[in-house]
Structure formats: C-alpha cells, structure tokens
Image (cartoon, rainbow, N blue to C red; front, top):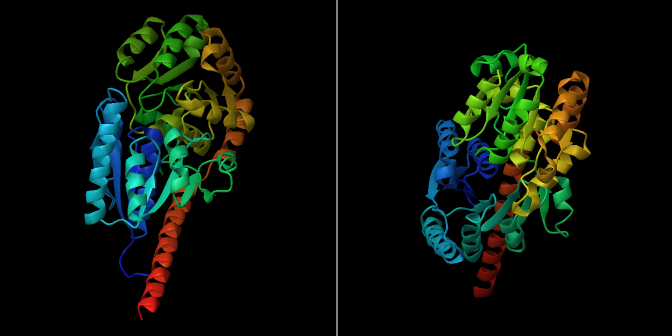
Length: 387
C-alpha cells in the first residue's frame, strides 16, 4: 500500500445465510491478514437464529460486527426511508472508520452504502453469489471498481466490466467432519441411509408440505431403512416431527441446525432448495442432491440448480413439477444406487472453490491498491501544478 496505515474494509450483507456467510468468511480472511474489518448485516426477525449463531462463531476473530435492524417494509416509500437512514449511517461511518474499500454482498441494504461510498471516492467491490446476478448487484455494477463472482458463467454476462471469479466462501468446518462424528452430534445412526431435507437458512414451507405429502407413499421397507434429518424452520418443525412419528419413520425435524457441517457429514442424499451457499456447501462435501429451486427472486435458484445438473451433480425439479410421486422417484433412484450417488458427488465437486475467501480478499486488496495509487498520482500532479 502507498500509505503506512493498516487497510480498512467495510462489508455489507443481507441477513440471510446466502449473503451473510460469504461476507463473514471473507471478513475472517481479511482480519487474518491484518486488515481492520467491519461487517454490517441486516438483522431481521425471521433470520435472527441464524445471525446469532454466525455472530457467535465470529467472536474469536478480530472482525467488528455491526447489525442493522431492518423492519419489514411497507412498500417503496418505507424502503426509501430505510435506505436514507443507511445512507446517513454510512456517511458517519466513513468519517469515523474511513474504510479504504466497501464490499457489497447483495440485497437492497448494500445499495445505499455502496453508492454513498462511491460518492466519497471510496473503492467499491461487489460479490455475487448466484449464477444470475441479483437486482441490487446488477444496478450497482456500473458504479463499482470490480465485481467478484462465484461462477464463470456470471462473468460472461458482464460485458467486459472489471471482474474476477473467486467462488463463494463457505464455513471452514464444512466438509471436515466424519460421518460418525456428524451422526453422533445429531443423534443419528451412521449405519442407516440418511436423507437430509434442507430448505435454506429459514426453512421452506414448500419442501415441508412436499415431505408431508410424500410420507404416505413410502414403502414399509423404506420406512424401516431410511432416517431423515429435516431442517424445516421454526413454524413447521413440531408438525413435521408428528407426521414422521405417525408414519413410523426414524426422523428428526428441527427448526435450525447450527452445526451444518455435522448435518452434511451424516447425509447420504440431500433434498434441498438451491441457494448459492447451499450449492457451494454441497460441492464442498461432494453430496448428490435433488434440488427444487425457489421459483421467485429473479430465478436465481433455478440457474444455480441447472448449473449443478449440467455438471451431473444432481437432479433439478421445478417447483410446479415437484409432485410428491415424482420427487420420491428421484429420491428412490439415488437411494438405491450408491455408485450413482458417488459419481454425482464427484461431479458436483467440480463447482467447489476451496480458496474462495482468499481470492476475494486478494481482489479487495487490489481495489484498495489501485485506488491509493491513483490518489497518490493525482496528488503528485496537483503538487507539480501548484509548484
């Protein structure tokens, strides 16, 4: 760096796992390199259990965490009002903390902060987790120094804008737990075929209803042989557990699992949504999956699921086509064929980016260096003119 002061970086993320997990892992990598790092993240009621767990996990790091209480918006005017508050808060932060770089991880909360940084001449970088760029990142792209993406296919849509493929940082414990230890942590039998049902960090009402409708179709042999770990969200966990028990299934239906490394380690097969962090974690663990993408939010999850299907890492079934019988047929095919699951697991590993946090850290540092070099050159020229 041209100056002798430590580099300072502000990262801004939504409160969902798909945005916050990569932001926190990048923050950890920056802090380990001696960068003073602060993370702003949206604190919402529906994601509070996740954010509390992730924040607790970061306590041993040198990262400064600053939650942004965000209320449910009542429309465009309410969101504009909250955006104005974030703009003003960013201005105060820039005067006190004075970051060299602001990094946005998507979601509308990053937009006012990144634009305020742009107005101050602060270096800006975006990270896009999904194959298809989100609305906020698409809108911000022309205003930032560089865009970091998780998939090469995303880079090809940027029309030559400065970009780098970094991958998506995942929690370091993912993929590092043995099956026996994972099963023990979650009170599961490691010798039994285990289906993990995962609806993302907040659960999925659609997957919950699907499993409830699918249970009666299971054969007696499947009810005896299978065990199910179903992460269903706080609203449905009790009803799901009752449905599994009534069918005589060995199952654990829980609102939330903090130790996702244990859940993945214990699983033979995953039925899941296809958020970017989920796909990255499946790739890290080499787990075959049946993916039912969330059909809204600009089709992000659909594109993620198709990326998995293209490399042969799983099956993608659109939500309107996800009838219980069809989904069960896909699960049965994979449950009955361990060799197929193993091949799919090897294929999905092609999407894994083990050093994503380090590559993203390098991209952030490069933005800071480029900005500081330009500033120094401008200062020299100004001094020459004044002299």
